[in-house]
Length: 223
Image 1 (tube, rainbow, N blue to C red):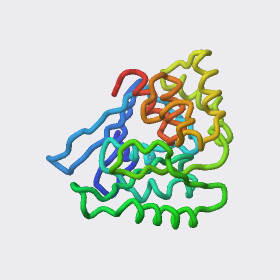
Image 2 (image 1 turned 45 degrees about the horizontal axis):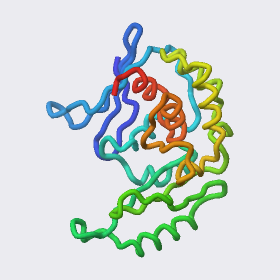
Image 3 (image 1 turned 30 degrees about the vertical axis):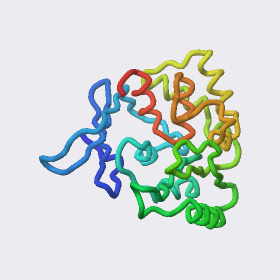
Image 4 (image 1 turned 120 degrees about the vertical axis):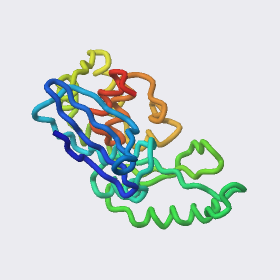
């Protein structure tokens, strides 16, 4: 049996299939005979999945691997759908003359910050990676562990087929105790876009609100 988990305005669909002991979620682009699979996530079939706050397949749509709704990324933190959102605005340059200038984007960002509700903030990333983009981020005050029960997360990982070691659990608890804001700055405990260890991947998944199933699939080698 197939279940549509999410479909964005670009026509990208996430479809789940459950089998006897395993499950998979395919990211599908196109329609009818022109459909093709962009990615497949695989994990243990759990009869009663655990709902983890601020984590969803809709958030995974913003992972940068395919076309996604940028408006969702700009509003998800404010709507209580995720804890952190990294943003990149394209700047005017010789190959993109129609894009806004740095000064225009900075003014737009200042106006955007004025619209944020209590407890939600936005700042400029102090590591501007590419000169043709202006990097900012939206975040909730506090730490990941202020919002998400880590014991519940670890239990779900185990059911999905990935055992978190004692050392990894200790590191994850430490990372999830950092202020969320730090992950958008040069003082981040690690660069979430370049996760290297299991603890990094698990923390990144919680930070960006990705479903636990997708991180398990990656940790098990289904990339």
